[in-house]
Length: 134
Image (cartoon, rainbow, N blue to C red):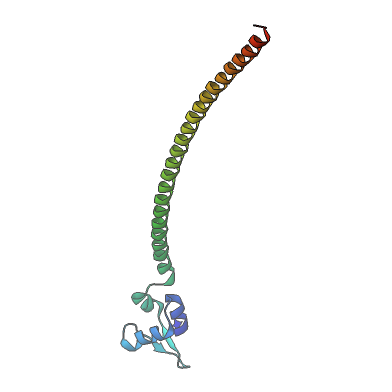
């Protein structure tokens, strides 16, 4: 036999909730010599599930919640991976543009440098001509 407090603890309910069930006739109970309510466990568990059974249901709910959170995180990870791929493509495009402009700059520099050297030779040629060293 269980006291009111023990019955409440076994079911995860409060003592007033168990007492209300007794008064409403949901569960039967009797008083002992000291006036405490005594409840037969079979009678209690006929109406209310023991705490251990309730705990097995809660982890399933928790597992469902964790699965939903995991799915949400997987979706976020997929989006992040896609953004990284887009950034990598953009970086590759920028590198290709940079290399193109570097080649263009080198060609322009080479053309300008060749022209200056040609003019230097002409100037030296003129000086040589004036000095009669042609």
